[in-house]
Image 1: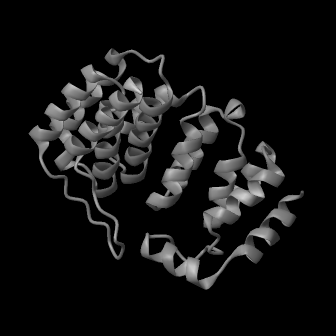
Image 2: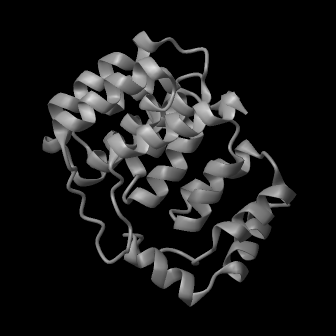
Length: 227
């Protein structure tokens, strides 16, 4: 499938209803309005196509960029590509898609450390998204890898940009869900920082209570282990 074919397919999948939803989540007008169900359908056909992903990203179209993050090859990603794509981020939806890809690359740990302390809202969000991905998916990482980030959350979360606060809260939950030792430390941080204020705009989204969420996650894990 050529890039033109992909773009035509994406445009055909678009709907005004989905465009309205994305607008409420901060996506601009350069979009088709493609549901994630349809993006996944197209992903099954294309699988991985790194060259096409770069061309799709270059269009600037929101749906094309989300799809680019889905079909790009993490093993072929270099620093130039990650930094260029990061510089293009302009809303939290595309940042979620991008950081899902970046978290699978060889540069994930380096970029997480760099972006987590970035003053930029979207790069900051991306860094903490990667940390959450690592906490949930990379079981070989030691507790010592995550513990410094708990300190950063406790110190900085209320002073960071809006969507960075949300991503930090999610990363806190993910870290605390790994094991009982990190759960105890993450809950202590969550109780120290208290409620995290995030402006979700014209959506019904809520910011989860990190301490309560971690306790429930660990309880579910223990129940599964006993079963």
